[in-house]
Image 1 (cartoon, rainbow over the protein chains, first blue to last red):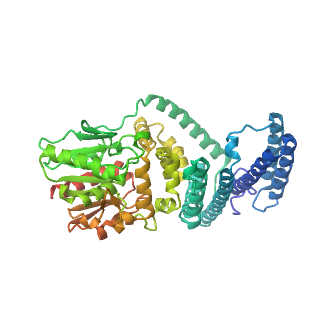
Image 2 (cartoon, rainbow over the protein chains, first blue to last red; image 1 turned 60 degrees about the vertical axis):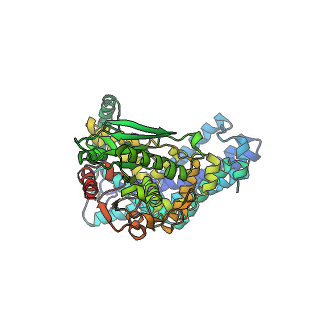
Image 3 (spheres, rainbow over the protein chains, first blue to last red; image 1 turned 180 degrees about the vertical axis):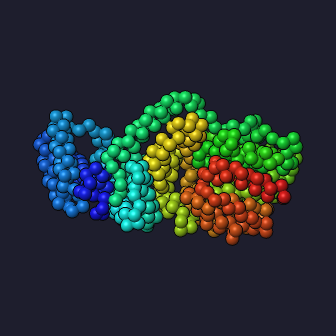
Length: 200
Length: 351
């Protein structure tokens, strides 16, 4: 991925930057997930919710700052995510305790916690697959460059992104690991709402 | 060099926005989206089931009626979507007398319906009505997708009532390696699902189908919509398909339980182990002429899943018809209109 960088011509769209942005987004998503997991645990245990929230935002920003050291993540973009985290932090502290969308009685069940854990595994799997798709997209772009072909529109670039995601997602879908994980997730969700006699 | 410049991107975004604006205008003008266009009369009703007869399009239609058994998932107007995309119209044009079972929308009162109700009672009653109406011992049966599997069961149990059987994109071997649906459902606790939800929501099944190809079906398809925003007719066709896709009846709980467990998870149809009522379904009893129509690019029912019928049915007059297209394209593409109904009609009229 050398010839499509903007260094030689600032007027040319930088695809590599877009790929880095996408990778940073996935890394950011992972941090958001960890953040919300911790927040859920805190909400159950802490009384001073505002203080706990600030602590978590600090941990979150530290993690984002560390991910900026990843060579695949653009440091300027990581900085952007940090700014976003700051804005969230300020907004959240003025809002107070988050609104509950899941009934408390359900949130306290072992079934719900089991579902949350499985969902976390599921998101990890999806994120890995999305990262694979970006790698594949980079490879395809390199092949185009090597063949002297160009990308003539954003739509073409988007279509390539769709193709790559469908390819890696389809591979994931057919894997035995995903089949088992998908079933586990679905069954775990059902157990949250199952009538007692339906529980296995 | 990728070759995209900021000016090009700005121009593309501007053109895209202009198309969106035009689309809003076109959408406001398309009007009602109708589907199911061929004239038909109601012949019989039982619970949620309705049996229709389509108005023949030739003076003297074929004396042996053709009964279409659609799947329980989705709605049967896919077979008669619009005038230029209607498999039913094609069959009528070829001189056939066409009937169709509309399963309706099961509700809480249908939770305990079993496959025995569908295969023996509902299909059985419709077959009998047609035999009486047309004064024939045997009728022609055409099963679509899951409706094909139900038709196979009926034909195996009551072979003396079926003159010819046509299966369209019908799964027979549910565990071929390329069957993604089967791969996914194998790990689902079907008892827990049905015991928890009762009837299985159609929207849940719809989500499962869309999640097989989410980047195309939930994203790209709608981005590509801008390409037809200046074409009211094409947009109307698109919306008609959307209407059909998201018109998903709930599934009667007990029937779903049996279908998911016996057909998908345990592959009992090819093993000859499906029980309907107190009888075992043995596909070797399917001895009438069989036309098995499958789509080569079917991502829901892979060709191998359909073609397995050749090995396990008892018919000595077994024919396969391969269509180059997908699970839906076989009904609605313009090539399908030219190829599939005439081929089915020709096969039937020769028998």
